[in-house]
Image (cartoon, rainbow, N blue to C red):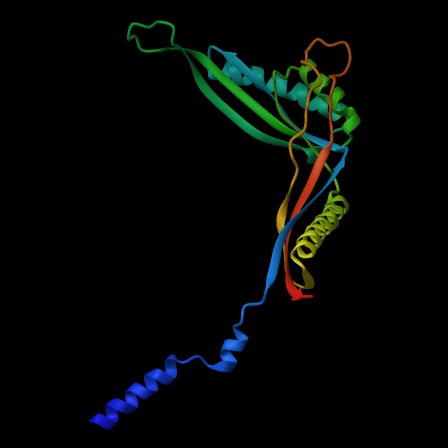
Length: 238
């Protein structure tokens, strides 16, 4: 029994002792990990905007008929402005009862009519025509314009340029840190992209008016394409 116990104890101790080869493989490699940022600014060349009509009437039928008439005129004006059918997509359609809450004194609200709302998302691929498109939409009966968003039709080239700038920024930081610490920068162990983003830009230069003599004034500003990248290097002793 004593021999068996001794053998079991020796086996447990052997298992607990580190394996020299394993310890060498699991040795922590000195490294440095830094994030670089790069961004490219350029003028947008297209825009996406939502236009539509909110119609009110005593009955749902009357509100719908009025809304349909206005939307038909808007579609015709958009087509005349050079917008292709593929760049028009209905984004919202609602029919809701309208209530009067002015009675007060605990009196239940009174239904006084119906509202019909129809909105279409328009992609404007010729940015120089955006002001004209908005002006014609309002002149044709649109009383709802929302969410003007400027975009880059082909952002791949600018995105790749931002990636190169991000890597260069990370390398510059790494050189500063390693020189200050008195160590050498070794091979790259890992590269991971953090993601790209396009911050919002200004839309209108001044308040839009439906009776404006010319096209709606637009300030497209700049589009910013930004990239963050995280790079890890092995450190070498000098």
